[in-house]
Amino acid sequence: MFKKSIIFALIFCVVFSCKKNKKTNSIPTQTTVTNSPYSISTASVYSGSFNSVKWTNIISPTYTDNGAFSEVYFFNPARPDPDYGIGSSINKLLCTNQVIEFDTVYKGYRNYSAVNFGNEFWQVLGSNGIPSFNYFNNNTPSCNNFNVAPDSISKSSGFTINLTGVVNVTTNGFEIRLFDGLNSDNDIYKPIFNGNSIITFSPAELSAFNLTTGGYNGYISITLENKQNLNFYGSDFTFSKKNLFAKPIKIIP
Image 1 (tube, rainbow, N blue to C red):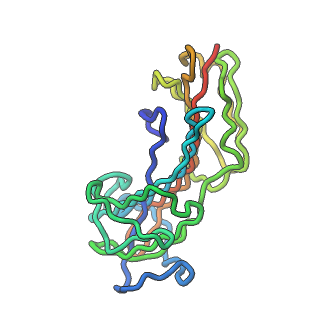
Image 2: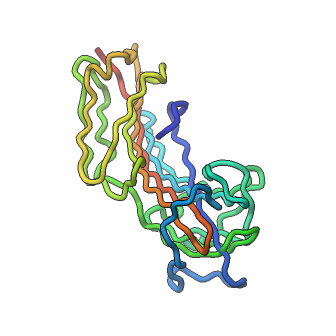
Image 3: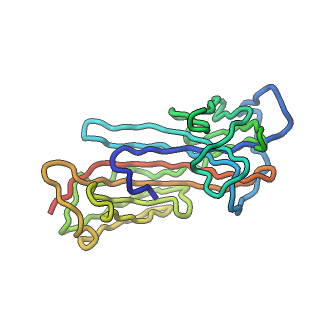
């Protein structure tokens, strides 16, 4: 779930993991390499985290912010919460044949532009205890139409959103969040499932929300996430892809 401190702009991370085979000076291209052998991981600690995020944030009726963000951390020793923290560098990290540089301030690999969000091809040339491996991540969460949220909602009537064609969401990786921007205790979260989801917010659920006094006073966000835990050559990594939508709304009587 989104943290309750997120009010307007969406900030997202992408994290990817690394493996080590025989050392090589040449980087294979996507057309010449297949996935390295892997298995589903049930580990409690991980050697790396790959997070990819794509977002659409409707700031106003005339301005929409679109973007993508990638962030990858590697850890030795492995740690139980690999999403954040000081990570170590490896020999080289590529996403869809583009080199991702190590950020010496944040101690991770960061990329602030889209790198083929729909079909990522990760190449890890490992070191510092991280193995080298290759992995295609085309498990992209999406739906037919994000922009189904209304411009205003009525506390006394409630409202319904019909989200269709949802694919590639995994357990605990999907939600609609409604909040009034003033009191985080009023946040409402509703689950989204693969296929079609009809999400209803009742008047009783909206009763504590603050009313708009002239402009937008609330926000609604939709999060679709695909999360995998995979083991490459004895090391465990998490792979997360998030597709997000957000817009301001008016809360009326």
